[in-house]
Amino acid sequence: MTPTPVVDVIGLVGAGAVGQAVATTLCSAGFCRRLLIASRTPEQAAALAADIDDMRQATVSPLHPRAGRVVDLADCQAVVIAVRAAFTNTHRADVRMGGAAANAPAIGQLAAALRGYTGTVLVVTNPVDVMTRLFAELSGCEQVFGIGSNLDSARYRAALARHLHVPAAVVSGHVIGEHGDAAVVCASATTVNDQRIPLPLQQLRDELATRAKGISAGIGRTRSGPAGAVLSALRKTLSVEDGIEELSAPYGGGWLGIPLRFTRGRPVACLPSLDAAEQRQFTAADTKLRTVYQAVRSLPELESPDRERAS
Image (cartoon, rainbow, N blue to C red; front, side, top):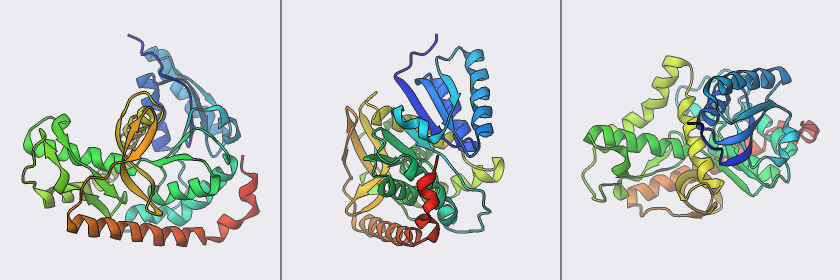
């Protein structure tokens, strides 16, 4: 049966590994009628649009892909930002932070091009908490979220379900703070079948810490997991369904991953109760992200007049 699209048009910026996975996921889900793709070059955008069109023909998907420019995205109901600058990440620890200086200018250019955009923006680019705040503050857009903690939380619930041999649907728990080394596992508020149980916490933390590294070592980088997190977030932010998503958003003067309860597309922060250790970790993540953000904002590339001419 051909899926019925639930929204009209989604924009996608970036035709790399994650952008390709997002486009494939939206096509297979039949989530939207149109997908407008922009990338570093028109040739990249056109190639991905053609590839997704082949998929559409083979799967009878209702999604129609088209290549375009960033300035063409104004009428999209949501825009997914999955750009990645060409750079070599030399970080052995805190790996996601390795892209801060490289990716910030591209995010700055997109923010200038989309200034005043009134739809939803989902940022995938790492370090996602910092890049989300950067895009939001430079663009002035009001509905901007990062998807990092969404993916972390899904991995956490799945890991615990595998350990306990139960369906993931009966596990309730969050990972918040940074999408990275300062992630906070909300173990004290985790339940299974609505019951608090002893958790193999260190084992779960170890699995979360190595999950992305193992995927990247095997296939180059994570892609399908982030794409799934994007689709889940789009369903909540575009009022398709209500529920909780762990997204990077403003909180207490900073930006970091927190649970947001969406009702008809409107988010309200709903942090669980944290024990003393978790609260210290959450505060440390907040401090770390604020410090990195200030360093990124001081980059001379973000003051370049070229940012005003992005297209």
